Picture (cartoon, helix red, strand yellow):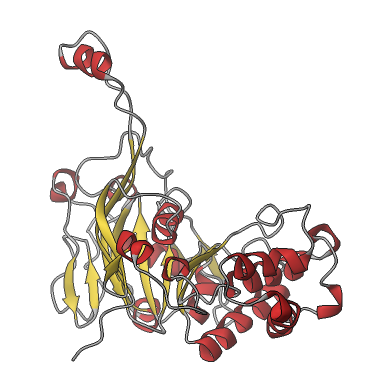
Length: 357
């Protein structure tokens, strides 16, 4: 019997903005009022994540990756679609009676936020930040709580002697370790990391990434790692989703996407990652700004900025389809079972990175 995926996201979309009450909708229908604007932050996203995998979600600011992460973590409800954890819907997991002494199944997903300071209650000491949830949910009794908190602090690289300090008495890297320990305290199976290292110094980023990988091996964790920093994602992710304006434009194994990206947007992002083995390179950013999600372009959302755009791209939205084993892309120029980059249009012979010598 095949094991069910740890996480299944099926045709999930998220809209922000109200359609208004009955009168407002009626006036808009007969042309006496403008329809209220809505933002489609996530547009029909589907993927599966197996137990123990690290899924990297990348893209520019405003592409919908954080909204997707918050829906997975249960902080936002999808407008359409379903999210299954270990084959079960969230409502079913909340309603199901939990076994005594184990963490409630509703706590299987936990989130680690970008800002480790604003996500921690400044009025609580570390021992309460980490220990309150397992105490309330009866994961550990009062007699064993202090030892439980100390063990989690040690595993996350924090001296247990500091358990009575407040969050403002720690550095940024230490605060993020506290946030990680707090998430682990309820024994989750999936961690959603939303830009979890972007606010940290580069040297501290490496330490936190190594901590994430050590914890995965120790606790069998599954990660959804959201970041705009492709250099970080390259080192931690097993698979990657590339998002643009709410849609997935490419997905596949991390090693293959970084060595042979197929979608023009993926290629532009990856070619812009600085590397020590490339010298005398001029980095040209993607032309233009990301379009407003209030009024996205018709057809392929990326076509106004794409150097390879054709007439078909401007009128027909490409579907995310299989292009090779384990890989998918949403681009009219990428053939199925593709092993090479898409053809370069006649009017453009350069990608965003140009070697000068």
